[in-house]
Image (cartoon, rainbow over all chains, first blue to last red):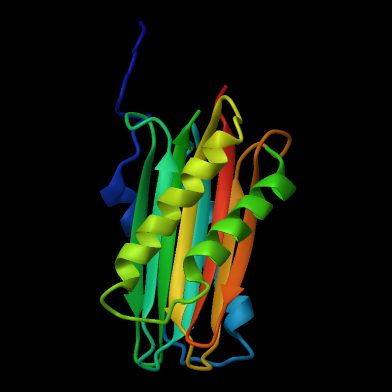
Length: 113
Length: 104
């Protein structure tokens, strides 16, 4: 018996991905206050955790995960992204997370193979 | 995907657009988008066929605060690559990254 699932397993589902990212950020830097000495380690651990969770999904996607970590000081920050890809098979998702001392913006781009 | 070529293009765009700019909360969202689009068009001109492009631009106000940006990618290391550039002046800083992924 053959089962052919088209579209479901190969779509970039924004809600699912954003849920995964939020959990990863919480797990990596959840209850911590901003410390300049640890920022390096935190950014990398957030990104690596996100990427490992995404690859566990087993979908035929290439992923690009970027994260920006900043101390809250009243300074403004803007990010924009422009992409040249295939709207049907590719997608992106950006999650913003903050606590009292810092905030973190994680962007995930998924490109279908 | 030639990193050096792309990096040079990104640097040019950043210098042109931001050389006399001050951080202005009203204008900056438009400027950020404009720069992202400009970088994308320039890289497309480089004629990397069969490459999908992702360009990300981050602009922030300079107040002496620390910012850290990291990226990890899950792709094919033989065909895919990225280029990045940072631009700073007294009132703002800008980080731009362009990723190219081969489409099989």
